[in-house]
Image 1 (cartoon, rainbow, N blue to C red):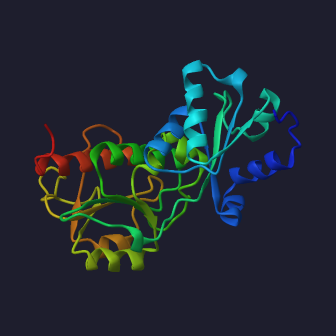
Image 2: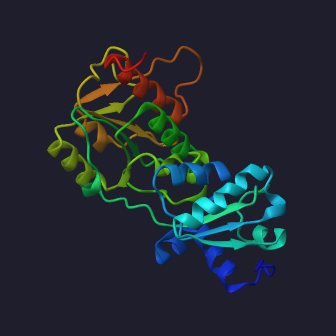
Amino acid sequence: MQITSPRNPRLQALAELRNRRGRNRAGRMLVEGYDELRTALDSGARPTALYYSPSLVRDPGQLSMLERARELGTQVHELSPRAFEKVAYRQSPDGWLAELPAIPTDLDRLRLRAQPLVLVCAGVEKPGNLGAMLRTAEAAGVDAVITSPPVTDWGNPNVVRASLGSVFAVPVAEAEQAELVGWLREQGTLIAVTNPQSGVPYTSADLRGGVAIVVGAESQGLQASWEDAADLQVRIPMYGQMNSLNVSTSAALVIYEALRQRGWLA
């Protein structure tokens, strides 16, 4: 039976998941978009409910997602276009939306390999930047991405969208700085921070061992406490008038330099 009323209580509850307070209270999150949902399922995520609007689905081949969801025990609900727009957070929705349990974010659940490569996002607030760094981390095989402090939650719809669902494919966590520094020390992982004042270009630093690359928000940069905790400070050379790169670009450069040094690039 199709849900047609935007005032349906189920849809009103879903709409509350678009804000952080609602997600924290319910312990649930939303994933909108076929590609994002497919990545989530491929990564082992199990939606509790799937909502779709047939008239908004652009590719009939995508409808196989319905059977895949049902096989996982997911409740499937058909919505009218008007009802779907009530819960969608995109301007041009593609007719797919899922409700999932919140992603676990405690440090203790992370399992790092020997000589891990970790990305720490220190005070990064913009969901688009966090999502972009998740895409890079997934592509590069990074062991984990950790926010410290957790300014923006991993269930933010724009993080999910910007990451194309890779927030489900990369182990993530959040922690305050003191806890995280202690945890990294226990793991035997060096802390490398990006600092434009450093005399060491990132291509000259030794990034072959276990290392956590720490990048900060563009507006404020890294706090001095991160520089104090660092085992290594590196800079990305600037040759134009700009004195910094977008944080997601900076993270990508240093991550791939670490891969190059480890011989992981073909």
